[in-house]
Image 1: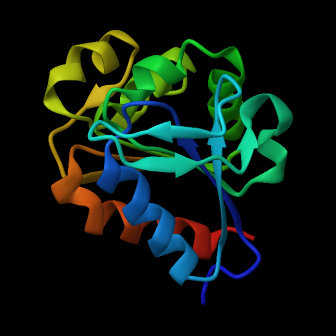
Image 2: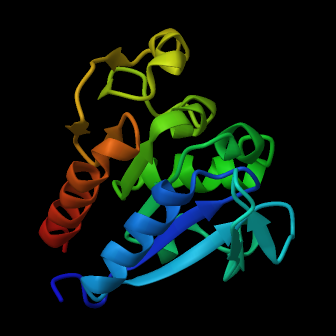
Length: 175
């Protein structure tokens, strides 16, 4: 229970990748963290790429980065929809600006690009969005997990054990 007292936002939108949302969600709950699913656009639930629903605890418009110790962005095609909502982009941007843990896996790098938080940072992602990250100023590398300050990135579902390990490690260090 190393994360008791920590509050984490997991962002959700339609077409999210199931494992990239649910594995960190339950892993962080297992560590004692309070994990909230934060949605965009006002829906009460969102469907994954395969139709699996996730219920929303709060809307991005109603929360601020100051309320959380970390913001986690799952992949799938959801990040491309999320970044169309200024409140979602603002949440990621402000979390990064305030030194909170920001963790993104797979296509979630799209949210990092839209929030302008990868410039000068080392990061990874699913290979197909490498150019997006590089063009946004990231130093892209092909590793299962990359930690640059409080920014944590991974490439794909196979990287979830390393991704979750580094999130737990980063949150365990933060005051």
